[in-house]
Amino acid sequence: MASIFGHGLVAFTTSKVIDSKANKLLLFLAIGSTILPDLDVLAFKIGIDYMHPLGHRGFTHSIFFALLWSVVLSFSFGNNRKVIYFIVLFLSTLSHGILDAMTTGGRGVGFFIPFENSRHFLPWRIIQVSPLGIQEFFSEWGIRVILSELKYIAIPCFIILITLYFIKKKKS
Ligand SMILES: [Zn+2]
Image (tube, rainbow, N blue to C red):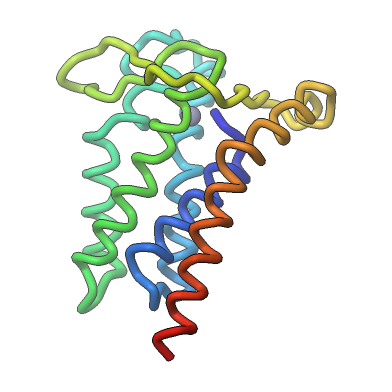
């Protein structure tokens, strides 16, 4: 994975770009949705292999899962804004797999599970893979992760958010 901060920031930015009126609930769901896919590391604990469809970077990182999950959430919480909720949550959830597919480590992402079980990377593997443990995160490895995410995730997101802010200000 990229770190939970990287994933969370992408969700926040996605929400703001698509829905300038995104409320706290939607932001919370979007950020939660980008962190959720990595709960699949629990698979290791119960002995499921990495390359299994339910293994790490498997089903929960797939397009199908993002679709399913965002349909459930938008119907549960979207009220009269279901479509907006669906779009924001689908893109946020899927962004997790996309960022993972741009990391330098691990195996690829099972985008097409359950229909096809192969794992994929994007051609641009520029994001330092983040350690899964807290202890390792506060190490030299962690620092490299932070620098790489600043460059490839945080700065682009901030540029987008600042641009949005000025567009909004100009309108009002
Ligand atoms: Zn992941």
